[in-house]
Image (tube, rainbow, N blue to C red; front, side):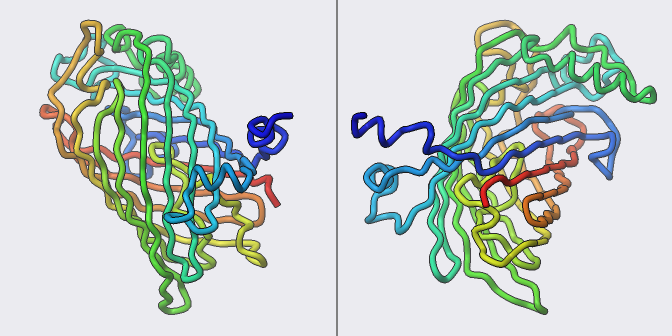
Length: 328
């Protein structure tokens, strides 16, 4: 076996965790609203892996002059986004409404992180998304299936106007830092500022955010898993010896500078519905995450400002995440 083969042997890659996500602007997820509109649903599954890189390969992926005792992680996710107009019972929505669209893709991610003795650290997330926008995303079928499960839900009728089929390729990078832990009233707290960008035919945008966590036994990671963001693949929840459980609340304030959003601007190569994008979009998310041994469960609520010029008001949606850990 060659030296290169030894570096990338598949039997050295072990599964760390499996996660399931569901986001929705109504039903049982969003506790503040119950309307289907704009970003109406997101669902997916994600696997985290420990690649067990050799020291030689690790030194190439995280050079010693910038990284001390780096940790690495790989992620593989299958995700789907669903977007609709404000009035889903209208078979011919107004031209100034949010276009109907779906997005189905595989997300491949590589991460590296560093945790220092004083709890400070840094984390890099690199992600490549490959998928499809349009009818082949199966967004219409999934939404109709979900609505048929609940008789009191309206039947979506505007899918005849959805975006055309288009191959989707997008790249994401994000750097997160972690502050020292503080303690007040017996509760730990820390701060996780982050900056990043997306580039591709789906999204072109820059973003920044800051997350504050407050709770008991804060985990040695870089924030809660997020469907529209990412999960920390570089560490097991059992990285803190003797900590069988943890619980914390968090708040995230974020802002995007948007140059392109295919679900608003329309298809790249085909004629489709479109609206004028708002270049600045802000979000506030509050949530809670709890873990006992190998099981994690979290809920969050997000409020977002308008994304396009003719949008009458902002939007809110709820999120559930469940995580099962395999690495002991």
